[in-house]
Image (tube, one colour):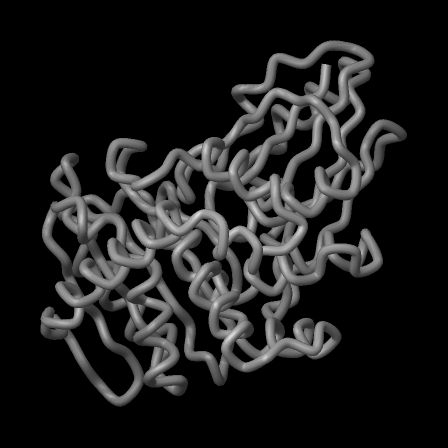
Length: 318
């Protein structure tokens, strides 16, 4: 059997789109919310099976990865998050790069020697790597209008991955992947699938307009912290709004906290765009926290840890 395991955001989906356009293959899809990263736990593979893993932290899936390798399962692992110590095993092939200016889809694009670069551009925009996206797109001779379309698709695909449960999402990530993989070019998808694209775009715009009315809970010359209510729109928009705040104020770190059903907070942290570092270190100090240098998060920050987080956030980016 073949298993394709991928993050449910723009980067994970677009990485798999590229791979399966280049190498069509029937597989069992394993994915979920953007914050649902311990996906290898769901893979029931046996000796001789093949598993592709895209855009989820190797460090967070290490025990299950080692178990699969011990069972003689072949694993191809591509990611840009902190991996910890990468296992050395004849069954494992990995492409890991934690550079703050790359993403999994850009790594897949390099691996495939640019066969479907436009999808990597979409993913890079989704991960708020605008400069990297524009550099990759320079090989495609796109019109400004077309580049903007790829940017908005990436933002909308990333937006669709956020939520406390799959019920918060406009489209399930595996369903969205199945629609996208039908198109060699994301521009063709946008032209042919207006109902899907327009629903994502209108949902994004409505949610963002609500978020923009929220005032900062704490603001200084170095950091900005915002707290959103426990509502679907807030859970969906927490990550992409953090990206927008980072783009508007590239010298400032931002944290967007959303009240959750557990009585605590879901946290999204964006390091300053002019200093893409430290977000992963900050969030990893808290249970259920992790991510990458420029963007990280905490799945559930207990209420009594809020003041501790705020002080750690201020100290990290003072």
